[in-house]
Length: 418
Image (cartoon, rainbow, N blue to C red; front, side, top):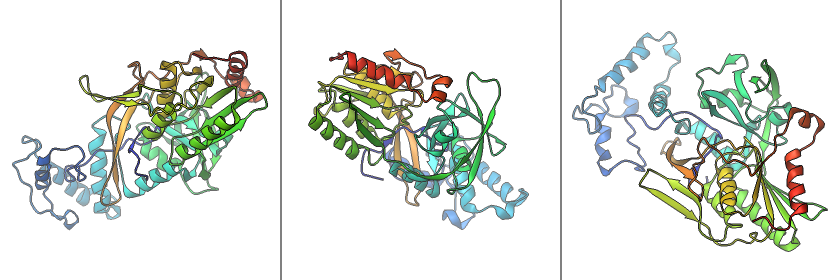
């Protein structure tokens, strides 16, 4: 990971796991008071793995909870479970951490084991093996948020909003996002079958997808013959800001008559990059507002570069556009720096902070929600386009893109979009 602000939104993605268990005490010290040192005294252990011998009954957390119940459950599993010989103390330990965070009911607050954390870092670096699709939980159903362009999932026909009813024949009912990710991912050239239900269709359909190595450059550009410049951003990853700066330099040199910023199927990523990108259009004032409570909020102000502010711009979004991409679209819409075209975005407007732990695991915990510069909540509501254009099934079959065409029509007919 980079040293960037570790706040991001992936639906990317991402996993419903857990905060910390009753023995970790938020060991990084991120969100507990200084009294958290006494937390470790709460844990009683007969197993050397934890290295703690007694439970202090004078709990600094909640005095009326019998923490011995935890160990009774632990010992019962170790003694009675039919496959107890296949259980390790570490698996039970991490399972306890995961179970704790399930109580938050927040699909974006997650505990990641060292292996899962490594997978997450690979995602942010843009390299991994799988099908190339971001998944999340929508209405308690595993849902495709964003199939990445030219990746196996998109080539197989998966679309944003598709509901995953089964993975290799196993129902996803009550399945966490993390478990779904583990089952869908796998080595390149292996296959996975997803049972998909799509709105507007009567029956489910099986899609068998051959996994591949997913290496994604997050920014692609095209200078069109009609004088318009297209910047496609697939995610807000480690490479995004450098590639986007190169694109802006190219725009400044070539002086196009208009820009199309394509954020469709972009599941999000780093906050800093979203703020910096928006600042290339927004000269001053807030780009996004981070709301912690009704009385506490933080405004992220434009950096003031605004090299693109005088170039007519259209931003493309769809229901696969989430979090960081919604921040950019919302900022440019509220400040009237762009016309937003396409479909209503996903509505992933919560803030996660990443805390890396000593054993290689990590916690990704929701700490706030995002608001647009005008104070409109992104979470659940999404960004409503100025001009709604729906891509129909017949459009995909004919390989036409009415959303892109509308953007071209707007920019070819207008010289100023304010």
